[in-house]
Image (tube, rainbow, N blue to C red):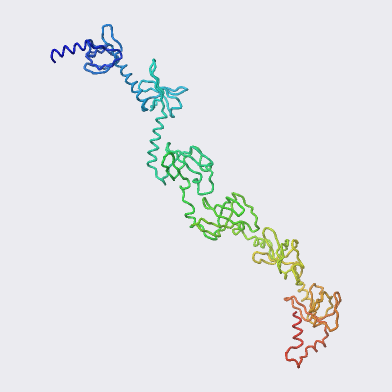
Length: 528
C-alpha cells in the first residue's frame, strides 16, 4: 500500500464514529481473565466481557453489538446481546411465516404450559396443547402471538397447529395407499341410530359406516354392532375425491348369503325361521342373516288365524325358490301336522264328537269341529231310513253330536245314524222272506205304500202288490207278507196279495209278443 493510501485510511478511521446498537464484525486480538479485546477497525480496541465467550481465543472472528462507549473511548460490545437480537429476529420471522419451532415443556399451570424455546420462555394455553405432555417433554409448536416489550418479548404458542399438519400429511399418505375393497380397522368415535357409525382409521382418517352396510340381515340398529371406542374391521367401499372421509361396509366382510343359499335350500325342505314382519298379506321370515322368505296369509295356518308375533320362531316348508331373483315362498301350515289327521288320531273311528253345522251343499253337510278341522256328513249317513233331503235332518248353525266314521281327504267323515244300533241287523234276525207281519201304514205314494217296522225301518208295499179296490190310509194296520229283505240296499218288499192271485199273474200271456211275464212286470215295478 502506498503512503497516500495509508494516510487516507487513517483519516477515515479517525473520522469514523461508532454508534450504540451497531453490529460490528471484529477479530479477537487478546484474551485475559476478564475481557476479550477485539479489533473493530477503530482507533481503539473494543472490549467484550470474557464470560460471554468463555472459549474465545486470538484470531477468532465474531460479531457483536455495541452496548456503550467507555470513558476512555473504547467501545463495549456484547456477543450475547447480538445473539439474542438475532434470535429474536429469527423468532419474529418464524411468527410471520408460520414456521414450526422445537421446545421443551418447563412446567404446567392451571391455564396451560410454559415452553422453553432455546432460552426464550413461551406460553401455550391448555386448549392449544396435545395430550400426554409432562415436564421435559419435547414439543413442536407454532408461534400464534408475538409481542416485543421493554421487559422483553412475549410469545404465545400452539402445538395443535403442528398436530393438525401432521394429521393432514398422515391422512394424505393413507388415502394415497388405500384401495376400494381393502380391509381397514377403525375406532368407533360416534354412533348415530338414524344414520350409522363413524370410525377413525389410524387416528387420522374418518370412515363412515352407513346403517344399510351393517348387515345383510334386517337388523340395522348400529348399537347392536358396536360401542364407542370399540375397534371394528371394515371393508373400504368408496373413497371420495375430497379425501375428507371414506365410506366403509361391515356386511361385506361376509359373503352375500344369497350367493350360496341355492346349495342349501331345496323345494319341499322344512326349515327353521324367525318372524321379522307381519302384514295383511302375510309374514316375512328370516331363515338366516340376509335371507328372508314370504309366507302368504293363506299359508300361515289352517284356520286362517295368525297367532305369531315378531320374533316368533317357526318351522316353514319351501314352496317356491328362485335364488337368482331372491324369491322364496314358504308355508308355515304345511310344516305343521295336518290338523284333521291329528284330530282323527285323537278321535278315531267310532268316537263321538260335537260340531256345528256350517253349511249344507246338496247331498252333504259341512260341520265345524273347531281348530280349523271340518267334518262332512253325507245324506246316506244321516239315517238308516234314507231321507229325501239333508235339510230334513240338519239345519245350518245347529249343534249336534256325530259319530266319527273315517278320514275323507281333509275332512272327518261323520254320521248320525251310526249313533243308534243298525236296525237291519234286527230285521235280518227277526224276519224271514215269506213271513206275514202286521204293520202300520206310514205314507202313500203313486208307486206304492210305505209300512213301518217296529225296528224303525220302512218296507215298501208296491202298488202291484195291493189288491184292486183296497184303500190304504196312513195309520192303518195291515197284514202283509215279506217278499224280499235286502239290507245292503236298504230295501224290504212286501205284498198284500193271496197266493192264488200271485200264481194267476205269473201265467204267461201267450197272445203277447213282448215275451214279458207278470212276474217281470212286478219286479220292474218293485224296483221303483
